[in-house]
Length: 486
Image: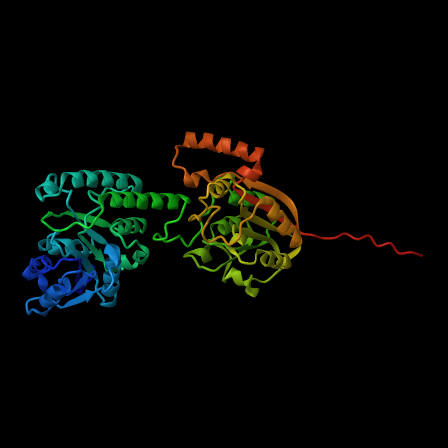
């Protein structure tokens, strides 16, 4: 927003049964600010009163900015109403939107201060905080139980998200449309915790949030929020997000990273594969499902010529390998990669494919005689998915064994049977422990103890405690002895 062109500012008014307050609230928009408003978008969420008509009357006046009034014939909910509003704001080409409530609880007089940091390019979102100034919420008439609940919930949310906001629960918001377009708010709930989910999305996307003090007025308006349900929902939102980022569970309203993480450290599948390559002379290597190319880069740095294949071209991937081919592996390994490879790396890829056996046969055909495949696959026999299934809590996670993009699951027996059926002999087989560095926040000493115990359990019973299987394969070759008679 820092360019010389003035941004198109829109005021989004969400209203439900606000016939007695809507016009009074809109009339409080400072006259000197109205010329800066490109459009006012009033969204009546299927009110039972005359909210829509009052909005039309305000729009028809000569002293008001250009105004569009939308009345939903079906109640979409607080979150659903915002989704519709931001979609129209995008369609109307607005640059900044301010969320204003039609009941007058938040001060329209503060609109210039709400948009100021966005116009100056200082942030991506501005929140009007009722808790920023000590005593302000009490003076504005906020009930004691709401003040206490607000403080407790905000403390919990800050602790779980690593933020330092003074309030998570103000409905007075201003957003850059560019920031809104960068987060999947369309996937959010239609309920009142929509506002919490969009904060989490902004934090997850690294957006800059600025708070300003906002006085509050509690009058005789009707509150439609069920406080206990709302408290439960917002806590579940931050818990769901935190668990999803650790790999346990999914949060459909948070985008899944396009790039799979490089697994560093001793005992990981990637470190095991690099160890299997140790001592090989410079070789031609094909990395299928190479993602961002970080494993390929390590292989190339060991003197090998690496070709990578993936359906998504992650930024910088071509610089990390010798050649990159963009292709959908679910349609097969593309002809452009050539053949005659010494090594093919298939790290955590066949479980994502609809026809893994066909892909393995293709790999065998692309190898030179005596070539090898380094294969890693999550172990569905691990105790974690077993417990999930046994307790009736089976579901997909954001990553890990139950990654929601996995199409196939493998135990050791199933994997052994598959590779042999596809014409491979198993030269080496290993199992890894839990990726503790990725999912644990424990300090180094505690993590070391946990890791040692996990490794001992893996060695004791790999089918139950092994997190991944890593296999080194080579095409099966029959030896025949021909004896010619005299």
